[in-house]
Length: 285
Image (cartoon, rainbow, N blue to C red):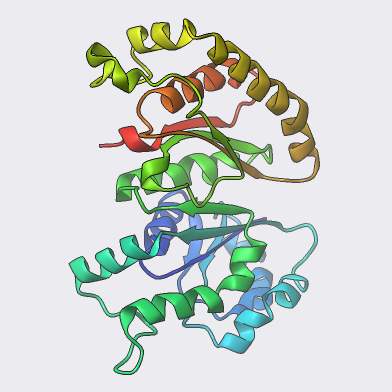
């Protein structure tokens, strides 16, 4: 049986993730008390539920804080044969504040004495046990609802075979580090195509940008060093029962160097890893 536990701060996309899993054939429950997880598993494993792909539950800060603090011990009560994924969704504080302002929703922890920004901080502290236990962290700060649904479909549903799911992602340092990155490579030492007028409005997927970078001596050296590391150590990550891995490559704006290198690495590794995905954060519309 497969169990997906969804958690994360309010406004990060938990409902979107739960709805996507429901569409994929999971038996879904929102705002389940943590203490009821073992009983739920027993119930779902009974015959009447066998037509479901698995179970997905959303656990958030509305749970009693004592139960959240006991998350590890409660997880220890679940059957060892259970295939469990803990998905933790998050976004940066500014993105969360903006979403609450736009929707005019009330944060579940906010009150007359606890303003929104403080409630967001308090929620982070309450959910720390789940964040620490997460097998997959997704940063939705710069994702649309459709991109988040695609990410859930690819990385959670598409990983049902049990092989490690790998995301290679480009990003721009000027817009911040991706919160869900496991490995980060800095490509800002490479010459920047931005300063070539004819290349400025293009990106690393364009042939003339690739040609410019491939004419730089450091480009192949850096690619070889990164690919050598990944070839050596990705299998070890997989052997350690790791289910998810995010490799992030950044340059200043996330448009040229990181996009080129991410695409090149994806092409080099896609035949070896069936659950390899690529995303260019700053090229998303």
